[in-house]
Image 1 (tube, one colour):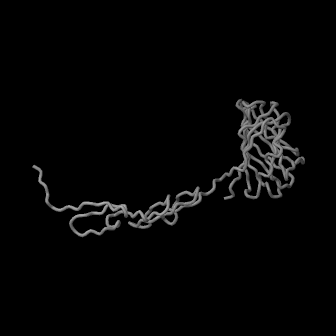
Image 2 (cartoon, rainbow, N blue to C red):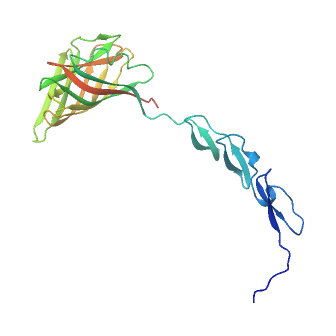
Image 3 (cartoon, helix red, strand yellow):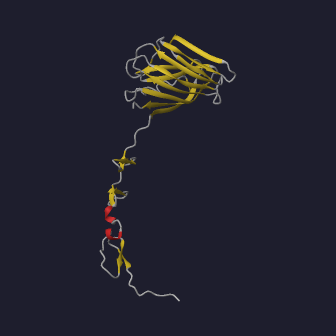
Length: 252
């Protein structure tokens, strides 16, 4: 048979003001949130506040941060901070269809904000197979057409055949050849150097040419001092279609 104890036991009562349960019954009781290990709701004052321990057994309030800030740690406690920018920042992304050249599309994409830029082509093709994809610098909306390009590209095709091309004092630099439809596109990833300030600008990078199924490495410089702030793409013959993005490369 069960034994029922007649020893007094405390109970609890809900305090709607403090939003906590307080013990009741025999013995002395201190009716505070701290006495029962609760955190008073008055600690938080604003939507989005965060409760953390500023020291052992010491609750503290961290006010909500600003839009786009992230929670991090500073001095051993939580803190809101603006996230560091990534290494690449999109400057411009543009598509063009069956045009003689990209004309002013990529004017003024280079500024002193960055020292180097990355130019990425998702796809480029033309209306004439085997046409050269030509690159030229722009300065103040003017195409630079001095016979000052020096450079080359090379790569091995799927059959092991070496594909090369070099230029010496030409008015444009041929990045590669292109196919004549969307199934024979050219993609590339180029880095610029020595643009914006008066210098002899350079490009270098990699490219895949589907027309001849060959990956290429390339590099070239423009041997005339200019302050390049843009570029233009065109074909040696026919019209050009594609999508190209320009990214600024963080200085640090």
